[in-house]
Amino acid sequence: QVQVVASGGGLVQAGGSLTLSCAASGGIQSLNTAAWYRQAPSKERELVAVTTSGDAPNYADSVKGRFTVSVDNSLNTAYLQMTSLKPEDTAVYYCNLQGTRWMTTHGFNSWGQGTQVTVSS
Image (cartoon, rainbow, N blue to C red; front, side):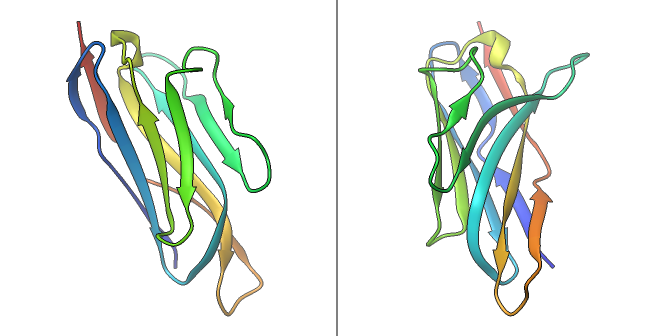
């Protein structure tokens, strides 16, 4: 069974930086797609960034130039580097990882538990 654990959220002042991590475990062979979503209070969950093997990452317009998504397959971990944070970036951030597992033909598509990011003005 695949487990995905997100971490790295916290409280930061506007203009600051945070890096979120999303680690998968459970016989992971490779991560093919890593996506980060966020959900602010009273708003729908939105896609922030996504990266797929062999393709350039895609970002929401609101975070382009400030956020960077990456994957370290040696650690089975995806990251979201966030810089120049704004109060409107405040939300619970969720990661979604898709990939392959050893000793099975079944891939996986799993979510992390969410990590709170709060940006103060």
